[in-house]
Amino acid sequence: MIKTKILGHRGAMGSAPENTLPSFRKAIEESADGVEFDVQLSADGLPVVIHDEALDRTTNAEGPVNALTARELRELDAGSFFSSEFNGANLPLLKEVLEVIQDMDIINLELKNGNIRYEGMEEKVIGLTREYGVFDKTIFSSFNHYSIKKIKEIEPAARTGVLYMAGIYRPWEYAKKLGAEAIHPFYAATVPEIVEECHKHDMAVNAFGANDDSVIRQLLMMNVDAIITDYPARAREILDEI
Ligand code: G3P
Ligand code: CA
Image (cartoon, rainbow, N blue to C red):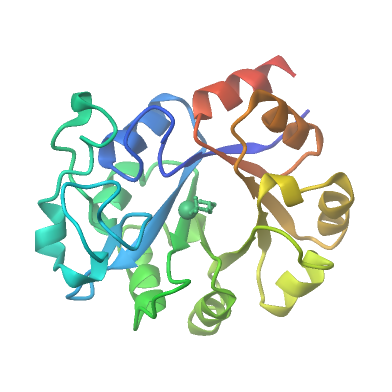
């Protein structure tokens, strides 16, 4: 029996505006086991949930996310870009997202700090997950591998996932060096040999970019630990068929 978990990418971004509360509610409705989402810091240092470093693509404002305070960001419309049905869906604070998803089984919090240095971000996200009682079911991931290491140094009990697109040689060894429990590879970099070796070395594999039916099927057959998908309902249907 395949035990792969389904994580909704930025909520359920295939059917609702990414990283908004409606998107997280949709993922719950689509029976995802958990969700993945992106965290950055506002100008006044509060964790907010948005993918891009600029506001332009997904909100009714322009410029860098970290130029506005949390209060200002919270007022932005992050729904209209997707469809008028979602007019007025706000850009959420991390704590608002945690309130909505706190009963899900898995939370994958991605620190979006690859290009911007967000001072104290690691301490802040750990603190909020503890405050909302979800620390034990959170996987902290990042493309910034220094940040992965830092999370572990601050809080050895935190579970971490090493995000990458391609090209890490023996990723289970690399991830162990960072103290991580999981690798989070792009689906195209996820092959059976790597999944098998990871499992032998007690390393979980949570693959992202699993959106096409054929890709979802292939990853399920590889027995990855989780897939991160824009379409949780579609993934659930395929999983139930196998
Ligand atoms: O965490 C998996 C995936 O979300 C990483 O890529 O650009 O969608 O944040 P991106
Ligand atoms: Ca992400």
